Length: 105
Image (tube, rainbow, N blue to C red):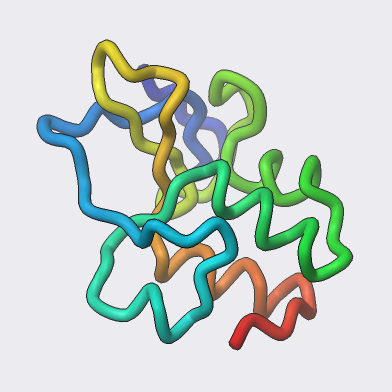
């Protein structure tokens, strides 16, 4: 369910199939090559690993239950029946880390 607010959207996007994503807890940018998604859990772990607030990273991708309106490319995805497993676009993570000054290699 998406709500428009100043070009931003809230809620999550439902995926039709479970996506492939890196298996590492802290995947490097190189390890993400060829993947479209990483899990929200990996995003938060990477942010914290690089001394950045995991809450700020989570909020930048919709926050708890997608209540925070975000740029459309940062809207998290989920699989019905697996709502605790959320995914975000690798390209959006790269952009967010650049903007936040996180040196993700």
